[in-house]
Image 1 (tube, rainbow, N blue to C red):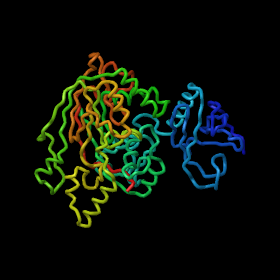
Image 2: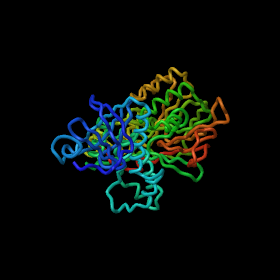
Image 3: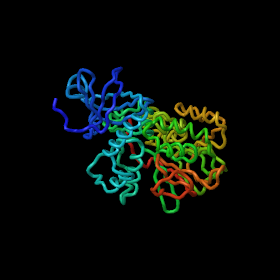
Image 4: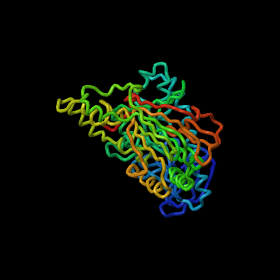
Length: 457
């Protein structure tokens, strides 16, 4: 084996498969170690999909050649999915390794915030059959916004988008794969893209004056937004940062004054009036609005079931793609009519559950700390909506009027959309980057099935 000319950026001793081993992360982006018999190496740029912090362990997710060279054993050439687990006792060393890995991986992706959006706005789409985002949910959101801000947006947004989970949240990839019972893994996501099946996806337009932002995942204000955004300073912890900071925020609970208004799901009205010939043609100004005043602990709007790989935020948004595919087959064979899809509230024609034209609204107005901790611990199963402190609605349109904290009226909150800071009030965390919108009233409406994503079936 030729000796590498690179130099270690950091070196430490890790426990790997029960053996204490010296591991180097070199300036050429390669992680090198020995298992006692063979020298091993992972090229971060070519082989690493991402990593996760799991207590004292760092789990590196990779796709490697099955044999030969520095990596895995077996016959050379075939690519296989493999996790490498490194355990280290020192918390400081653990934090440093996570930081260096994150910095290097980030340097290989988009160069700065909104870079993917800028690239998408100028891309010659005629050269491609689809766009693939290898990331969490943030890059997907930038791509959708880039497509919708083009001059040819109405045709550009029809470009199919694939999502390969490689971030902290991975809510969209989880939602798509879970709809057919597949685990949320890069391999399954890649296979879904290769097969070429597609489904429509609702896009929510968030509007404040002349400023627009297009959302495909969620909007949050209050507890969930505070956890999502303020926990960024603990990003070195991986996904554990969310649980860690959630506990802090519950123990030091904030409540926010404000007001929300929304238009409820119309499926029952359609059923009662026997309007069964088409999907709902909605004129928002003619619909009945419902208003709820604060204070609020949390407001959470969701477009898809999963907010992350372990956060089933909107369980009532779960409609198995196989079920919707069966509807499609029955319609094509004449067994069922497509109107039934609308009456069931399962989703618009061609949407298979991801384009029902509605958002799931989760409201927590007032909740003691212990029940709040209990219901937040049920997020991975979706059982939080069973709590008497939670209100859950399906809505077509939504207006948020955010206010200050109840305990300190000089401080506001954070409005978070798809993991990005949409607006922040006075006294929130320090940030040099200007928010897209002011901490003021905004409205949201849903464009049914506007975007297209690659799906498992």
